[in-house]
Image 1 (tube, one colour):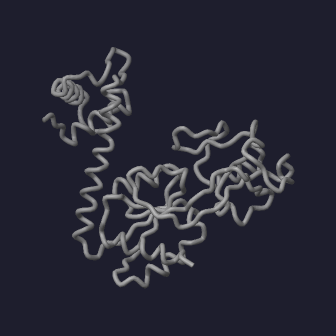
Image 2: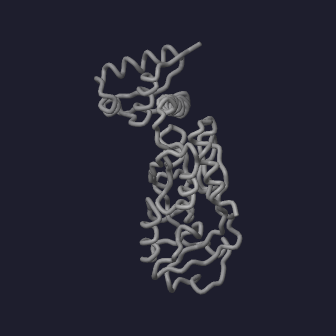
Image 3: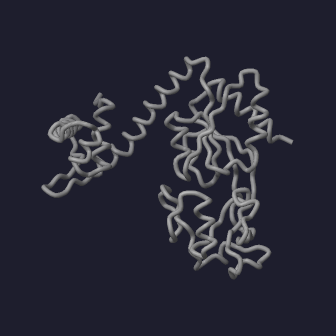
Length: 280
């Protein structure tokens, strides 16, 4: 069986990201000749070429691209295993909840209050993240549970429970051609500029890049973009903006998610509390 050490995977991923031996070596805090020698040794052991080198360029082969993608997942899994092992042995471990600012549909206070009544309740640390990395927090062990939005967040490998479903609305500036409509359809938005979410690959937007809802609302006010969002993210509606229901947009679901392999009582008790808080 061919095996690579985690440090060797780090070498490959660093070079694949940087595509420059000098920058990759500096990132790894090793000498450039040592990195070059290590990459040649890895390629020899695997029997495939991972990188295309020339005097001016470093490129990835298909084999290198595959190892970068799967190697990154493997490193994240190792990191998560170490974190979870340490936390499993820590009787005083806190529960870490990740969400984006304002991304709780107004439910967080009720959930925390319900959780406080659990016999094994722990202190809850709330972590805020950007639009693209909340799932990474759950997969690599930086967070235990997270509030995500389906169908926007990638739930692959995550167990989840729906806490709240809501319609989606288009946010436009006052005076916009759609501002006076009682409702619109997605086809009515053709020709409009939508924002690109920072760090979200495959975003459909063609407009300026935004990192969070606050930035996006400012861009809408100055007539740079419009946006379709879950209703709870924009209520109450800021002055100067108008919220119009989009009748044929798929509903948005707020879900509580956690790593599907995480079966610790710490997580199970929080899931139970969250479902109890939203059940009529």
